[in-house]
Length: 280
Image (cartoon, rainbow, N blue to C red):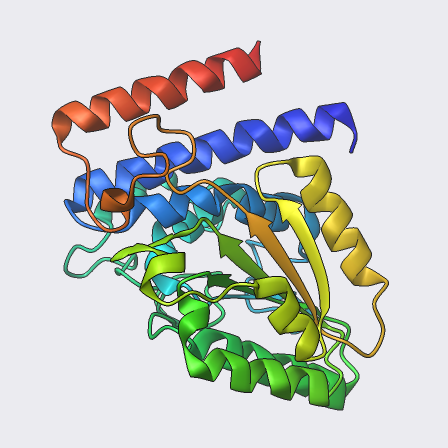
C-alpha cells in the first residue's frame, strides 16, 4: 500500500475510534470493545474500497455493507460521519430518544445504513440475499458483511454460509472479527467456533486470514477477494478488542459498557496523542 494512503487511513481510523468513545460516553451505554476492534476494516472499506457516495447514499450501483454484529454500530456511525454521510457532532446523540443513531443500525433513519441489524446471525443471511439479487440482476455491486467471532456460534450463520457457497456468490465478502472475546468471556470457553478457517473451507468458502490492524494485509485480502470466481470469500481477521485504548484492550468487561468521565478523558487523550503523532 502507498505510504501516504496508509497514513491517511491510520489517521481516519484514529478519528473513528475517537468517535466511538465520544458516542458511547455520551450515551452512557453501548459496545466500545468490538467497535474499536473492527474500526480499521470499516475505515478501509468506506474511506478507500467501497463505491459509495454520501451525496447519493441510495444509488443503485453502490456497494453494500451489512454490519451483522450490529451492536458495534458506534464504529459504523463514526466511519459514516468521517466519510461525510452526516455531521460528526451527531455522534453525541447515540442511543438518545429521537436520535437517528440508535443502539443498533436502523434502515431509513440514517443515510448509509443498508440493513437493520442486531439479532446476531441474521445480518449475514440478508447479505446473502443482497448478493444473490445482484447476481440475478447482473449488477456489479459488491456486498460486504461484518460478523463477530462470538456471533458465528449462531446456527443461522452456517445456513447462510451453505447458501452462499451453493449459489456461488463471488460478489459477497464476509469479515469475521476474531478478537477472541464475547460478552460472557473468551469465545474458546463460552462455545468455541474454532477452527474458524477450516469450518468456512468445509462450507465451500475461499478463506483469507489476516491481522485486522495492518492496512497492508487488509488491502491485500480485499484485492485477493476480487480475484475469486464462483466462491464467496471470508476474511478472518485477528484483532484486539478495545484496540487503541490501553485499559480497554483485551478486556472482556469493555464488551458492553460506557467509560465514565475519568475513563473518557484518558481514552480521548491516548487517541488524541496518537492522532497528533500521525499528523506530524
